[in-house]
Length: 337
Image: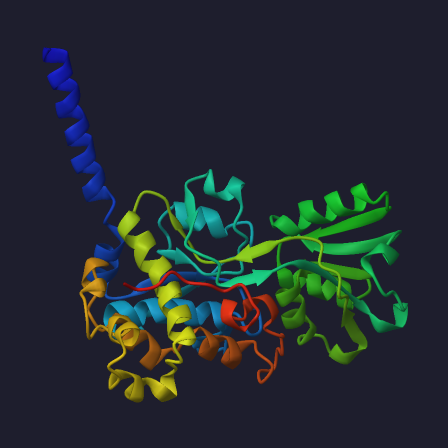
């Protein structure tokens, strides 16, 4: 009996210790007065530094949304540019609070102490090449040199695809995206492979961008989203629900320019979303008006998408799968209720 009581006591102590440990990130961010966000080293439309320390882009805006929810100030973010090889280690080592950097959700990554908080962008791997090569599909790419970034899912996907189809190829690996693009531009490889969204962005950096085409073929699933450390359930919920809030705002027609009208509405779902009914924000460790802060400073999901990478932006990526479920896409958020 004494051993049984001891076991219960030990379990209780471990549970209490776990609870204390599980709610440290939000507390640390609040005490620090800013969010530390890991982003890519530079990808047009997703994360760009203007040279004066100002960052912008789709992935950057997600961190701005979290800062808005916590501080009511989207500028309380410190950005840490990371390459593909070092990004997850930086998160595990507590050098950043969140990774918001075109990273694919996989089982292997979640089995190493990380958790993906959702899919902010549904993507797939594709190929970019020069139009003059006159190749129409990925099945035409046999016997070519292909540039790929090391430490990404793209490398394994590429090998699997070509081997399964009995096609000969040569991989040319690079640690940094910039080096990979220079090699492709300099003719060291005939094809460059990456997530399709990344290819749209990289094409903008080529001197003669219109001479390059992105094949319609997609050879993989690449669900991209923000990543946090495992073991902090509160922080995971904050990051997850910031994404869901932006999707719900989009679905309910709550955009930055329409926020004031939405705040006057007596519709139940809008009142819950905007903190006029219920204490959902407080349960997350935030404030009742957390979604209002996000929409006012950053916007809904579609505000962020169109501003940074949509058809009216310089990147011009069709929204496709990233439309809401109600508009033919697969972006879908649980309700706030």
